[in-house]
Length: 602
Image 1 (cartoon, helix red, strand yellow):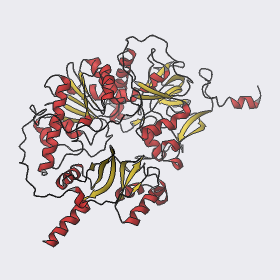
Image 2 (tube, helix red, strand yellow; image 1 turned 180 degrees about the vertical axis):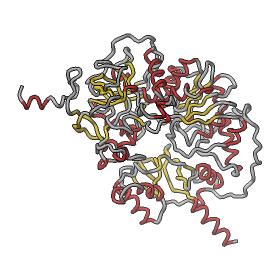
Image 3 (cartoon, one colour; image 1 turned 45 degrees about the horizontal axis):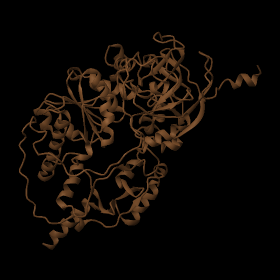
Image 4 (cartoon, helix red, strand yellow; image 1 turned 180 degrees about the horizontal axis):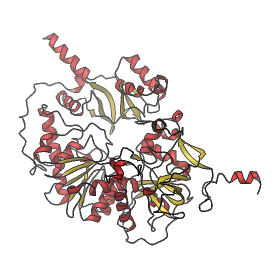
């Protein structure tokens, strides 16, 4: 063999596995670098990087397939954390990030302290990463509370988006033999997270016959939560965004489903002094409670509420949760500033519990359920290795399929890796994978008392009468200045200055998808040079989603919508030819200006 041939084997083509136990010097990987921070489509690029060295507690894994999670959308964006700079502050030299927090593969090398796996073992990986020698861990405390805890493939480098991944020994679990490589790689992060939420909190671990309300039930987290409830004898009630998902959730084990688009009381609680706004919210949340009872088939409130939307749903979750029950939350996909009416929390002694991923025992507990055939990974779509940027861009734009996604790495085609029959046949109804956006449903259904009979009778002030006949049309600005998601912050800032406005709407395909305000521009500047901040895209900084009203909406109702959500403006929309079009904007500045004008005239 020539010197050139020997050097060439330092890097193996994708899909050509080195001889078992032979570790090349370099590997193919999809990496993120600081100068590419931005949309995942451009942030991720294929590179050749060194294969990492391993320590005494580490395992080097030849990756066959990887899972896709939102944390590497954040890694590509560089927000909310610059993961490269954070690691460099800890003394790590690499100026790149190889992500991937779910994976399945084959052990190729082990450190000298590793005894649970050996070279050649087929394994799946969980993303819980910590220092096993940390005093907190050695004391027997939950490793999740260790200051060394981090998410592998996000807060640590050398995740599963490469030919080789570096993990700790306790991250390695036996691969379910009846699953393909891509199926095995898809669901551990969300599954172990759901397992801890439902079974990790002492007296509030789910029990047989417990009613469990599951938000986002057709997604990755929700689909795992439903199946864990079914496996443990609990009764899951699914919340979905359209009726197309009902059959899917029921096939996973949901007793019934609620379509959240049948209600419009979402968002932060109205201020308790806002009598009209609070009374409207109370009617909506009680109607939701009535729909819950209807889906369940009896008048029982959920002992456990499985939360992750956060800002828009926490008020409802706390309200409908049973006396002595628990709302457990692991994320804030709709926002982080959740509000709670404390009267319902303390008077009924409810628990609001934060939960983050899982420890090794809990991750293995989830994996055991998969190996026993009690959990389907709910794999919705498998991507090729070179589609890693596309998969994350779809997730970033919320256009990804429901369920879980996987990436082929060492496996070049789907359907490989299965070595046994499934212990149990799970008949799961598939989803099309296309995001369906149905028309908004009608007004709230049910009576004011629905869903509220078992809740505390909190004394509420009587609604006040406001003698104000004004509508939004009387005050709104009828000019709507907009930008597109791919525009830069500099272009948006110049528009605000030119037209002397404090915010612009973000339009995509003729629809308003968000708002970019001066506050958003200021926040984008933090931790960045002014030049880099102005180059960022509008999509990476805007406040996603908008709250709307129509021109004939009573002004008092519009004000309640703004105060309830702690926002300063509403987008005014009108119907034309069966479609909804933005026609203007109403801001708190418009309201204050009108008030001052009335005082002067008086």
